[in-house]
Figure 1 (spheres, rainbow, N blue to C red):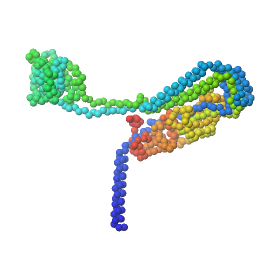
Figure 2 (cartoon, helix red, strand yellow):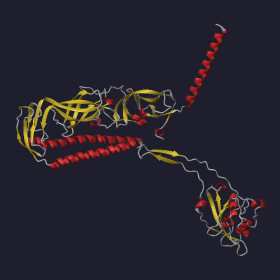
Figure 3 (cartoon, rainbow, N blue to C red):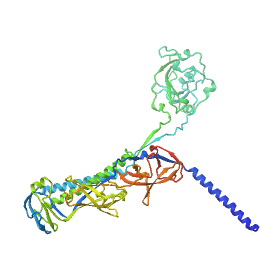
Figure 4 (spheres, rainbow, N blue to C red):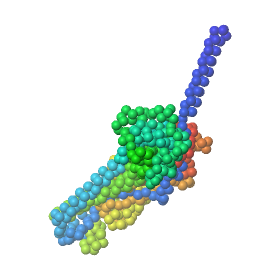
Length: 563
């Protein structure tokens, strides 16, 4: 191998090593920037369900090659034209009756139907409103405490004209002393400053309003402030010097209020205040104290705002909204069934209001002829015609129940009208979802698809055409022997027909976990049959940091709902 080839190979290896090091560094930096993913106990977002493995839907009875004639309270039979065992053709007269049904009866049926439709519209509007609501959120806000308190040189004149109605206001320090010299300067309208040596407040002096003694007499040991101190002025004092007319006294009498603030700062809180009436009208300087009532603009100060909770969203929690939506969806579903029954009732009343003749609708045999009065009291048909048929009832399965219910499986059927119970057989399950799921589904869940199935009931059952019935069926699910539970839908992701969650593994890192799902609960929970237990910890399966191998951190449910 010549030197040129060796040099090229060395350069190639060096380049590869450098690229690898850079790539590895970038990966380390990216991983370092990732935040641990919060994981939550499954038990906090699950529900036992308390279900026995059965589901229920409802449907309407259709007679197949059968006909039954029922009487209403407005019908009186005039004549029955057939006998039991007789063969009849389609169109043959079966019976004739007098009807007392009036237009008022029809109008009542129409009004009832319109009322139900209005209730359904109102419920749909309520559901739409609930879907737009956001869960209630309460976030603790801690305002910034960055407040600067700048100490001022005291005494400092803040304002006032020295009268009883508008006294001088002085910023005062606990260490300041009201000397006779300062009192004279106040009387003359000069602002001046007091000493900063240790002393007592005027309120602590032995001077009282009753004795009338002068401040000079009560504090003979107190010295006046030095010329250097008295010559120094603050910005506020300079402003006062420019406008002596607003801060002046008669020279003989002045009213003064001394104010102590935290940190000797203009924006500090007022911790103490007192008023002094200076009077030199009699020749000697006298001082009396008076009670003060500080105006609002003097009492104002900057304070650290208290933490507070910022409320947002509606007045309802996420679970309460989910329950409200579920209940409203169920109400709409129930109203749709009631509307169908009301429509059938109206149709029947319109049909009854004809010439009073009932004809055969099929070619068959008269299976039963009953006494009209007894039949009406027992809620039985007066006539039964059969051509070797039975009853069909259509229901619907949730997509989550596909594979758990089979053709040939027996179901229980219960009539809403008569309470009659009987057994039927599932004879058909559609391979395609229905576009009219709300007509069948009993849970009102609009987030899943429903697949129609048909039940056949023998003609010996005491059912009627257009009867509304409940259909109860078992979910024959084979699990690994563990108990199932219901998990909030937001934690379950489904792709290409497979469901999975993000779970914390034994190594403390996040990983995907496949789960087998079952029934729906309230439209908010899904049954987990295996792959997960209530002892596990799971993550909300969305977010830029959520991925296989991510670090995890245990958190509470409240942290998940923080906005």
